[in-house]
Structures are given as C-alpha cells and as structure tokens.
Length: 115
Length: 325
Image (cartoon, rainbow over all chains, first blue to last red; front, side, top):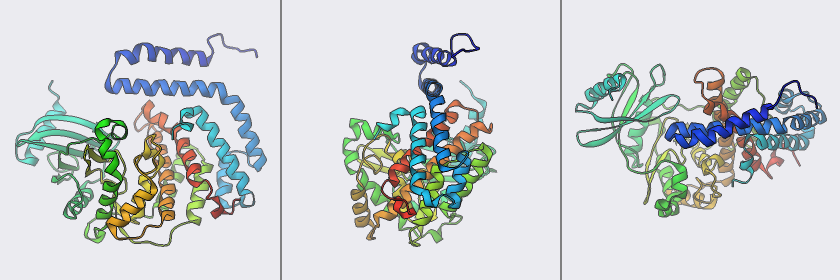
C-alpha cells in the first residue's frame, strides 16, 4: 500500500509517545500525575489497537449491518426500539453482541479475562 | 503554604462549627462536590460541599442521614449542614470522621480485610434491611422518579448531543420493559450502595456513605446495584466482589423478614448495568461538550462497551423474554 506520509506511521508516532510516558514520566511522577500518566498510556495503547484493527473491524461491522438491512448503528438502534426487527431478534442480538466484542478488543482486551 | 481560598474556607468553617479549624486538607473532588478533612475541638471531621455554581442542595441528603442515623444504620454523624448563603459559600454538610477504607481494590485484596471480606455480605445486607425499613414519607424532599424513564431520557439526550446510538442499550431497554417486576414495596433506597461508598474496617462494615442519590423506590434496586459487574472490581464474586447471590438473598431475608425474588434482583442488576453505562456516557460528555476537559473523562467513553458486554453476560439465557430463541 502506498502512503502519502513518511515514516513513522501514525501508529508508530503514538507508540513512541506511549513509550516515553512509560520510560520517563511514569518513573518521575507520583500520586495524581502518575495516575493520569497511566491513563494516558492506556489511551494511547487503545489508539494503537484501533489503528491496527480498525479497517478490518469497519468492514465486518458494515457487513453485519447490511445483513440486518440497516445503514448504521443509528438505524439499528431505532429499529430495535420500534420493534421493526422483532422477527429477527436472535440475529439482532448475535450481531450486536459481535459488535460489542469488537469494540472491547480495541477499548480493553484485558476485560475478557477479568472475571 | 498559604492558599487564600482554603484560608477563607477555614474561616467560614470555624463560624459554622463554632470552634477553631485546623489541618484543613482537600481529600477528593468529584464533578459536583468536594470533600475536605479537618480537626476542630479535638475531633476529626469531614466537610462535604457542592462546588460553587452547582445548584444542587445537600439539604435532602442531610435529612436522609438524620433518618438513617435515627433508624440505627451505621452512618457518619451529621454535625452541621447549610445552604449556599452560609459562611461556606455553597451547600454543605459537616460529618464525623469514620476510620477505615473506602477503596474497593484494597478491601478486596489487602490482608488487613480478610475477616471483613468474610462478613461483608452479611453486614451489607443488614444495613440495607435496616435502611429499607425507614418510612420515606418522613423525609422531606426525597425524589421518587421512575428509573427506567429517567435513564431513557438521559440516554436520548446524550445520544442527541454526542450523535451516538447504542443498539445494546436499546435491547436492554426492550428487555427491561418486557420483564418489569410487578409494582413492589416502596421504601427509602440508598441509590449508590456499593464498595467505594461504604467505609470498611478489618472488622467489617463501619459506615454507609454517599447518600447523594437516595430516593423513594423498590428496595430491590439497592440489592441489584450491589451485584452490578463494575462493582465487583475484577473479583469473581458477584455480590460486591465478596459474596454469592444466595448469600445476599438469605442474609437480606433473615435481616428484613421479607421474601426476595432473585429474578427481581436480576432485573435491577440489568438496569444498574445499563445505568452505569449511561453514567459513563455522561462523564465522557462533560469532556466532549467542554464542561471539564480531561483525558481521563475522555477515556471513560470507551468503557461504555464494558457495560454493554456486561449486559450480554447478565442477559445470557434470558432473551426469551423478548421472543429471541
């Protein structure tokens, strides 16, 4: 794939900042600032996962929505609320569950193991 | 170091308690209120006050604390309360300090609390049974809103302002409407009864805190909220991270003399999980809408899907109520 931008990629830039937070900032701060450093590292790691998984996830999400005959989550949410998809509710539940799992893979993959 | 706003707060506080105020220190600050510790007349005390500009009044919460104390619920002693035209400059309460730990992860993991973890479900159930025995009609100003309707409105407003849609939440609302329990006993409900909002010592529950969300409702709401997965803080035990559903139900039945339908508790757990997801949206919206710019609040928006996942866990095997096979 040919890219307009030079290296580093967006993911590599975010990774570099996250590594700096972990190496230098985390070790030289305490208390509230250190806690907020951890939050920032988690946020950047999330962005890295979204950059890596995003394109495939977007395509799979579009396919799930198309299978239910809706354009986007807004239309799906309305259809669930109005009962318009009640004859396909088990498909709807399965598709929505699959979407939630994909969102968690980016937001917090450790959540699947936490009991 | 001298801090003019803290010095003027100390002066106002001295007028309210009628004694010298020393060691005034900020403990924490939520979005709407601040907590301070100080000593006066040889006692360790706590000040809670609304942030300036916040219109909410702590008067109702003060009324609830008085009623809970009178009913024998373990709560901090309320020593003073007042409104925005007080020397404190905002609605406030002065409370006795209670020793112990509120941080859930410490209560769930530290060796200090091994015994407490053993007795905590019983203590929490007993506190709930006692607070649910309070006649809410005697508490002035207590709200009595329908929780489903309230959070339906909140979600609709958030979806509009953030241009969002949450199919999982729509499924949950459908399930809640289809499975709503028969109208139940109405009592005082704490509204946020979970680890984090109770003071725990090595011996067990020391005090029930944070009565800000108290209202009139079905007492089972408090039991369900205590089982919401977020309030297990990573523990595998469903009730507050320390016990089983059966332990909670049997302890509550023993203490209250009432019969508990576990399906009703589950209904409230589902609503609680949904509520917490919507509350996470509220927090991220305060960043996105510019009320309080913070990467921490921003990140909470991406935790909404944890609640969606929890809803699927809580509703696993229960979709038949919607005609789903």
